[in-house]
Image (tube, rainbow, N blue to C red; front, top):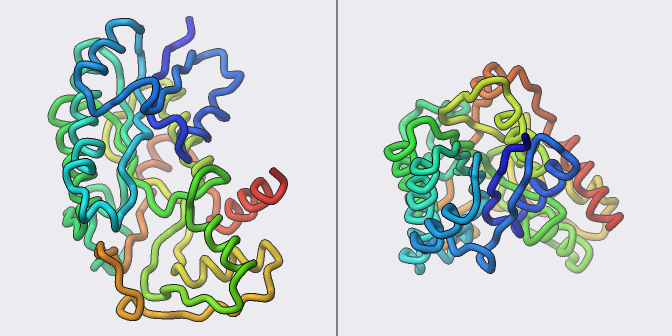
Length: 288
């Protein structure tokens, strides 16, 4: 009998990739919701939804991700990134469902000198990072056997993201300044969706916090250069700049590379190199 999977935030980048990886998989019966179908900031709405549907798994792809706007919208950011997670966890616990939550590299302050492991001390330096960490803690307090994926620099052919923005700017601007002193790893949302499926299809449930991004490390500047190179954009002069030269409302981690050893070992999985995944994604974007 097919297992029912509730996918929240289904119209976002990861939610759309989950639609594709679940399509045609007879082992699962997915229910895709976004705010129109289920307001996850409402405990009553969640409780009613669970009462009317048999749910085996919850994959929460919904979040408030506008990092700079979050600094001025603390209440809404908290409702989506922490309160909603707690409500989903409570409903999952009551109905004996398993839950997968998506978190972020922004739970770290970015002062490390090596890739962050799951047990490293968290110290977010933004409202976004703080609310995502709050969501993690509330989830594990209510549902200790949950799975949390911390990811970073998510992009896809769907919605707004850095890759699509740089493709557009590269074709419309003569010059572009991009930060070179923030280093991390881009994550193709399709690769994260595959990782989530690895959790769902494993012979046993492996609870815990896992780090997931694509392999390698790169600065935003070098990432942009790669985007333009792969897309054949040669008319835009991309210049490196420092974080200090490009101030933002929210502070970003300078170094947020994630150590994926735990995920790879637990699920016996390999992870694509970031540039290979970028090439695949740009090909999808250009051939839409």
